[in-house]
Length: 182
Image (cartoon, rainbow, N blue to C red):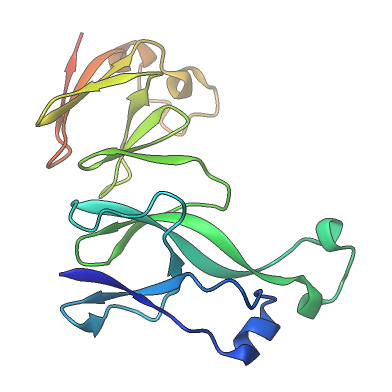
């Protein structure tokens, strides 16, 4: 069973990475009483349902502010902990880690979305783009009526005919398999 355990940061680490002394909501992940990794996380404003197959936490990443933000060329003064959303599984293993400020939504089961684009958590496979979805106990339905990526000249898979990707995706939320209904 996964648990989140409060992590205490040393004063030295706080000073080095410019972490306020009143910021005390850091956690690490434990499974069956053993620490999965020393990685620091924060729950974020929404909490995490550790009983779901996948859950999201804010991963703390040691990073440096750009000179244009701090007006300092000193790496020491630019240090900070960046908050990056990540999706983890029931074993506490990170499945997807996103760049800072990425707006990620854990839709249901094995599917997540970024700005209306739907992906498989395990494989990163792209399903399609939709402004809305419907779900049942076992399936997620997305209406991929206009697939922006396939019409983009810079789309990585130019062998795909955009019209072949259009339709309703019926995605199994347990294993990620899907059927395209035209």
